[in-house]
Length: 237
Image 1: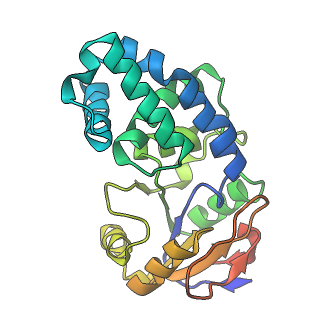
Image 2 (image 1 turned 120 degrees about the vertical axis):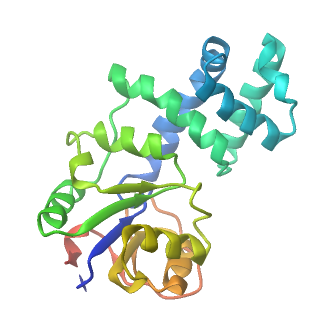
């Protein structure tokens, strides 16, 4: 059990609030099935074109790749390859969020959250804690995820979202920047994740840390020891 007397809680998503299998078996598979058609039909939209252009640059394709069907197919295959290798590329994450929107809105995708997550978010929010999300998934994807969970819309309990546009999740500067944006000292924020390298970076920045131990999680890695929690009910704040 962790007794935390700070003012903010920062949460990872995959392996922390939701299962890793949901991310890989549902979200990634949906994106891989739909990326080619999505690019072909919506490439003219400025937001889509910007994300696709960033992705093209990241994989070494020319910026005009979206201007012909062959180029679209090449970019779609590159996106699928990055997803298969779980590469945390910011433009890809933005594109995934746009693709997932259709799945959430149609009801094809319903986000999984562990049973202890909704009551904990409600309790923390009611007690005045500033609860936010930091994930490699885009901010848009995070908002869609928490608005369409099996437990309903959880976004009213969340005050903010951060993705890799703030900085890499294994760098201390990212957590210092988030604490500053929250208007808190790092020591007033508890970061919960299943990845040891992320927790190490947060602790280096001065945050309190907790290791999420969930079914199906990988070995956390990292250097420092972080207090394990198998349920958010073990965090008393």
